[in-house]
Image (cartoon, rainbow, N blue to C red; front, top):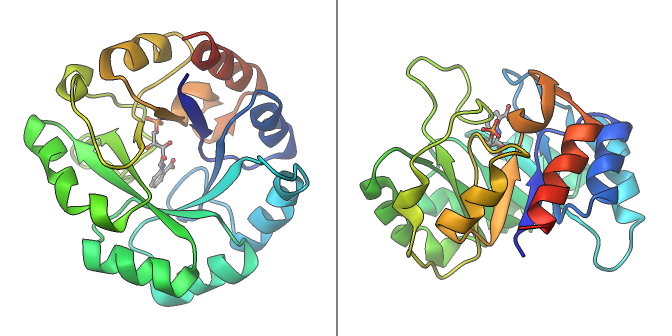
Length: 216
Ligand SMILES: O=C(O)c1ccccc1NCC(=O)[C@H](O)[C@H](O)COP(=O)(O)O
C-alpha cells in the first residue's frame, strides 16, 4: 500500500482528518505567495497535536521554496520538522547544506514534463531522503507546486529509484488509485485535490483521498 502526504494544512480540523485517516506525512507550506502559507510559529502550534501521536506518528514536512539560511533556521528551531521539502531551484549542494543546517531530512521536488526530467533524479538520490515527482506548473504560474496540474504518469512506469519517492500533481480521491497502479508509486502527495477552493482544505475530501489510497 502506498503511504500518503497531505500538503498545505492550516487548520486543526483538516490536520485531524489527515491524522485520523492515516496520513504518513503532513505538510506545512512556508511560502508567502501560496494560499496555503503558514508562519512557522503558527505551524508549530498547529502541528503540536502530531507529536502527541507518539511512536509511529506522521512525519511533519516543511515545504519551502529557495529559502535562505535565516528562514530555514527559524523553521528548524520553531517547527522542528522531520523533513524539509525543497520546491524551488535548489541544487544538490544546497540540499546537503539544508540537511546540515536544519538537522532535518530532505525531500526534493522535481518538476516533470518529459522523460528527461525523470532522468535528472539520479543526481539527487545520494543527497535526499525522498524524491517527489510533481507536474511542471503552467507557464507564468506564481507557484512552483500546489497547482493541481498532472503529468503523464506512464513516464514513471517501470522506473525504480534508490529512495522511496512521491508521486504528486493533480491527484484526487478519484484518480489516485489509477495513478498508483500506473506508476507503482510508494508514496503519494496531494494538495489541491482535497480542497474546496484554493487553500481551503476539506476534511471529507482528505478522508476520501486517504480511503482511496488504502484501498488501492
Ligand atoms: O501547495 C503550495 O501552495 C505550494 C507552494 C509552493 C511550493 C510548493 C507547494 N506545494 C507543494 C506540494 O507538495 C503539493 O502538494 C504538490 O505540488 C501537489 O500539489 P497539487 O497538484 O495541488 O496536489
